[in-house]
Length: 471
Image 1: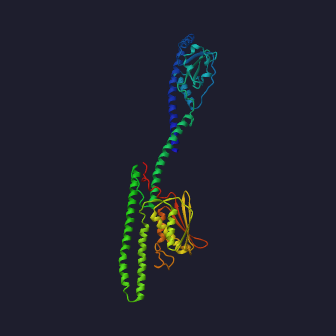
Image 2: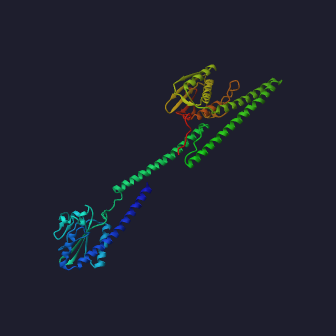
Image 3: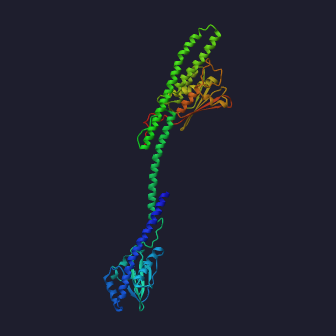
């Protein structure tokens, strides 16, 4: 906007400067023509001047109207400013230099107020034989130059001619109607093209931002298209390369962790067999307990690897149906699950999501024997509230329970189960679905677990085409 206004101001100033130069050239040519006309009539004897004037009028179509009057005709002078001063000064200088005349009247008149001859007849009232005269072709606002100078013996030479530049004395408005229209058209075009460019750039950035967000939730998200402008294609290539390296590192870590955990099971089994052969029953019991604890840790590590495995296809699943199946499984284990509310199907990865819900329900049933599940669904978010009637969690340790192998209750041994990985796995799975898990203690005892999932969710477009960056 500022650059546009500055360029327009510069263009206007340049245009005014060019107009002044043209006006100076026109004024110089006109001044010498008027000087030649004055010189001619001054050279004629007094008795021949009227004869020459009659011949000029009979010819018609001449550029100058010349008459000799017995007095100076009144002129309703128009025009002001530097443009008029330039023309008047040029005429005075030329007449002074060429003819030595100082007593000259230079004025400008409109065609409808111009008076001619000693009778002061208006131009518009001249007889029909004047129909071809150049003065009669003037537009209503075109200035007419009138030069009057004394010839002696109560005679005044009268010379009138049209200004070659009709708009010479029209001071241009900085924002005239036509210029304002052009400015608005140019400005609108610039703004429109800029908006299209910005929209194209921001759309590309938005697609890359959404791809980065999906990558944080799902490493198996489809790669970006590597087409488009050079910068966009280069960024897409770098993004896809980064995604590939992350997938490789995560897979390598999972395989290594799984291999180590699996290989540990064999020596643990051999050590368990040897422990059974110990004669000292106390030492045998202690050794077996240590092996059971180590085996629990290995199993937990394997469960953790399986829980973090999200390599499955997202499907449109019914939340009520999944909760009903888990409720039946909890009944077999001696727990009770009550479900309230209804939710529309959601695009999720079923095995991983079921594992996360199972971990949450098992914790609620284990500590409170009863889990109350309330479903709240809207167009923007699906919320599950799981409430138990257990002892709750100290407020200062709520975040710690998500850390691997953290167990708040020391009595949770191999006889009661649990390795401290369930909540951590559940949080990871929910975050991969774009959601989150919030724990908070209830005032009347018990713990409430809030699972908040966005709609439509990060896997809503999993069955569509791979996202492409626009050119």
